[in-house]
Amino acid sequence: MTRIVFFGTPGPAADCLRALAGAGHDVAAVYTRPDRVARRSRKPRPTPVKQVALELGLPVHTPENLRGGEVPKDLAAVAADMFVVLAYGRILPPAILDLPPRGVLNVHPSLLPLYRGPSPVVTAIRDGASVTGVSVMRLDKGMDTGPVIAQSAPVPITETDTAGALTDRLFATGVELMIEIIPAWERGAMEAVPQDDDAATLTRLVEKADGELDFGGKAVELARAVRAYDPWPGTFTRWGGKLLKILEASASLPVPSEETDVSGIPGAVTVSNGRMLIETGDGGLEVKRLQLEGRGAVTAAEFLRGYPAIVGARLPD
Image (tube, rainbow, N blue to C red):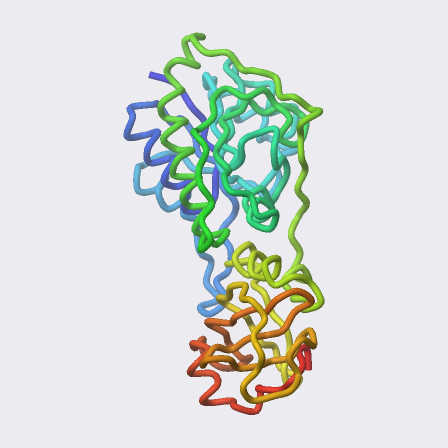
């Protein structure tokens, strides 16, 4: 039985925690982010990891900061064989990384050294990558630079994958891989292989402004952005001074408009064979679902019936 301290926060991390306990490992302590106030109820809400830890009767800690204070001392006192990290949301400082004899194992949703950094899934979709995968690595002081212990088979990226759906699928694969390799890693039957830094690619932190669509770009790239920024920050433009969210879209060949003479002007809204298109710098972006500020999400057909004046508009407006 391996003695483990677990670090994680969202739903996929909660699944990993449950799997570790179910596999018979001794989860001696759980660390997760502090409770956050829910927008509507204004009541503190525990993270999914905290909920599972309490359900399983595991000691759970929610420090605001891992640096300094009593956290390193508390972790040293646990005397764990290894730490396991999945989507904790904070960088573990060197004083903590050096504590467990079998190191700190982390699930990263890419085939390292590709897509190091904070947004590997978003960036893979934006790049138009056909496959990605999962790596279990030993954390070091760098940003996803530690040696790799195991990797999944390539995971296809489909034309309909959003970042949210693909992330869930990758982390499910990562949990299975982590559970599979821990016994061999704990007894020293596996080696961690250094990454090839020359082949590394980096990702950056996604910002809210990244979701604003520039219709001067290519339709295929804008369609990828719609999928890559789902669920956050979402993709959007403006119409009539209001925020207009583009929830689902695909690239389409440019087709002459049936109702306007603005075809070919980037940002122009046209209709062709009942389809709602936004002209781009290369091709048309076929909008399938959208949401106007203050209204619910609807299909393009429903939106056109309710707001026919959008046809012929040039976005952002």
